[in-house]
Amino acid sequence: MGRVVIDVMPKPEILDPQGKAVVGALPRLGFDVFTGVRQGKRFELEVTGEVTEEVLEQARRAAETLLSNPVIEDVVSVRDAAAAGAGA
Image (cartoon, rainbow, N blue to C red):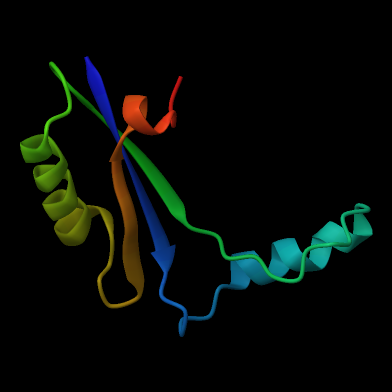
C-alpha cells in the first residue's frame, strides 16, 4: 500500500488569522526566534499498490479540484510519502 502526501497553503496575499494567532502565542511560550507563521493543510491519500507518476498526477488533480480552494489556496506539494520520508 502506498501513500501520497499533499500540502495546501493559503496564498501569500490571503490573511491567515490562525497563523497570526500562533505567531503571537509563540513568544509567550518562550519561542522567540519565529517571526511569521502560515498555517496550511496536509492530506494523506492511501493507494493500493505503489505510488506511480500516474497516481501522483491524479492526486494533483484531486488536490486542485477538491482538496484546495484555488481562489485562496495553493497546492504546494504532492509527493510519495515513502520516497520523501513523509509518513509513518
